Every structure is written in structure tokens, then in C-alpha cells.
Image (cartoon, rainbow, N blue to C red; front, top):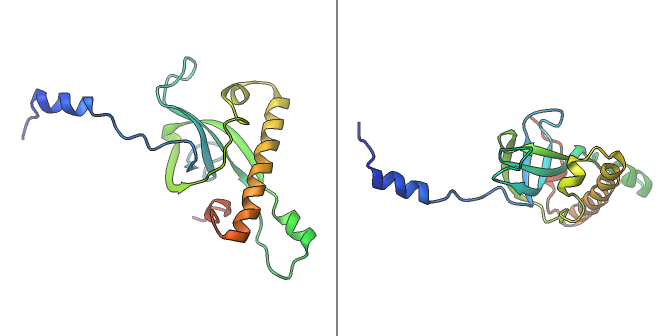
Length: 157
């Protein structure tokens, strides 16, 4: 059995691991009520905070996905079926599964750590409304362009 000498271990400790959980990265939630749902990382806390001393992040995701749309549907029906129900949540890194996809939506100004951690329900509601508006706008763009189509589809497994 080969034994690593001290120079190798010192070199591996000095070399930091690449940070891949950045804001905008699409992740799948693995635990809790939102298990199996897709979300976008808004802000990361790699070193943790005082109340959460572990790596975690704030995510904004889709609780209820838009329904299928066909050509024969009316504008009113398309608008109704294109609705998205969002959620915002603080999540441990171990409860996330990163994907290769990214979503270029800027929630940093809308979703902040104090809103997610607060017990003020009106602040959370207004934050969710802003996220809903942004996600629905992104979905309508994805219908036209075909980009980010996977993010707005229910995960089938």
C-alpha cells in the first residue's frame, strides 16, 4: 500500500476545489417537500453563516410547472396553462444535485437572505410574486426560442 508523503498532502490542501455551485446554476432538490423539483441558485454561502455553520445556498424554484400547450388552444387557455407556482428556500449543499444547465435570471435584488430567513409572511409573498413574474416571462420566451425548455418541464422518473 503506497503511503502519501507530507509534500503531496500539503499540495492537495493548498489547491482549492473548483467552485461549481454558482448563482444561475440549475439544481434538483433531493430532500424535503420540494424533493424532485428544479430550482436556480440565487446566492451561495460556501463557508456557512453563524446560524447555519455549513455550506448552503438560497434557491428559487418551481413548485408547480406549466401545463402542456397545443396549437389549437386559445390565447386565454394558453395564458392559464402557462402559470408557474414558485418557491424560495434556503438549502444545504448536500440536499442539492447540480445539473449542467444554467438559467440567466437575476433574482439577487429580489430574493435576499433576510427575506428567506424572516418570519414576515408579506415580504416572502411579495418576493414570490416577483419570482413568479420573472419565471413566467422566462417561460414565455422559452416557448418562442426553445431555450431553457427543460427547466420548465416536470421531472419524470
